[in-house]
Image (tube, rainbow over all chains, first blue to last red; front, side, top):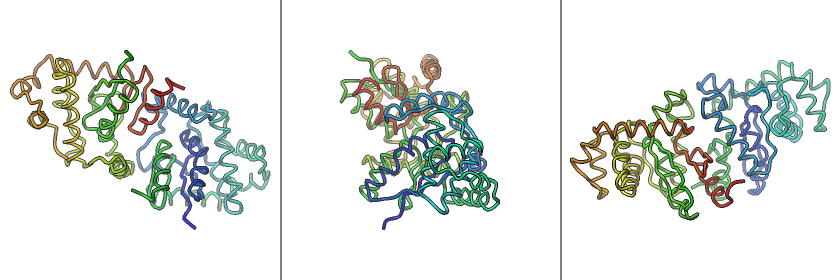
Length: 201
Length: 201
C-alpha cells in the first residue's frame, strides 16, 4: 500500500480551500489516499518571517483577483469572509480530536469548514462556529466536541502537529508531500499529478 | 491585430528565465506576439516591502528545489549563478537601448542573458558581461552599446519603464498581462494559455 499524500493547510488559507476541493480526487486517480494535516500558519510565520499573502501591498490585491478567477475556472463558489485572515485554532483542535477516532469524519469537518469560510464567506474562527458547522455537516458531537476544544491533551496534540510540520520544512499552505517530495501552492497540483503518474522525473 | 502579451520580468528572476523559454511559443500558438519588458524588482520591492524569494527562510530552500525540478520537467538547463540575486541594471539598459531600434535584437539579447545567468550559472551583472553576452549572441555593438549603458537618456528610459510597470500594478516576476488581465508567476502560464484560448472565463 503506497503512502498517503500529506496535505498541509491552514483553515485560513484560501488557496488551501481550492486545493481541498481537488486533492482527494487527484490522489484517488493514482490509487492514493490523503492525510489531511491542518496547521497554524501564524506559528510558522513567527519562525519564517512570512506574512499573510492578502496583507502584502499590490500582491494582496492581485491575490484576491487571482483567487476569484481560479475558483471560477474550477467551477467553485468563492467568497472571502469579512474577518480575514482569521484564527483557526478551534477548527484545528476539532479536526485533530475527531481525527483520533474517525479520520473520515475529521476530513468531512475540514471540508465543511473550508466551504463555510471560502465558499460562503462565513465565520469559522470561534468554537461556536466550528460546532455549528459540524452540526450542519451531520457530524455534530455537541458538548463532547465543545469540551474537546479546551482539553489540554487536544491543545498539546495541535502544538505537536504544528511543530512536526515545521520540522519537516512546511512553511506555507497548501503544501503537499508526495513520497518525501514537497510541492507548495495550489498551482503545483499539476506537478503533484505528474509526479504521481511518473514516479518523479 | 490583437494586442501583444506584456511579459514583465527581472533578469535576476529564475522563474522569469523559465517563462522566457516558453512565452513566445505559447503566444504564437494563439496568433499573438510578446512585448518583453524587463524591470528592476529591487525598485518595486522598495514600494511593496517584498524581498528576493530565495532569501526567505525555508521558502528559499524550497524554491531552489522547485526551480531545479521545474526546469528538469521542461527539459531546460538550470544553474543558479554564484552571485545571486544580482544587479540587472546594465542588462535592462542594453535591452531598452536595443529595443528602440530593433525589438527583435533586444529579445535575442534578453534570451541570451537569461541563458547565461540561469542556464549556465554565469554572471551578467556588469556592463562588461552584458557586452560579452551580446557579442556571443551575434548582436554585439561594441563601443556603441558600452556608451549606451551610461547614456542619460537610456538611464531615464529604464526609470520610466519601471515606473510605468509599477503604475500598472506589476509587483513580481514573471508577470504577464493579457488583454488587461494580469497573471503572476511562471506557474500561471497554464491559465495564460487557457485565457488566450477562451478569451477569458
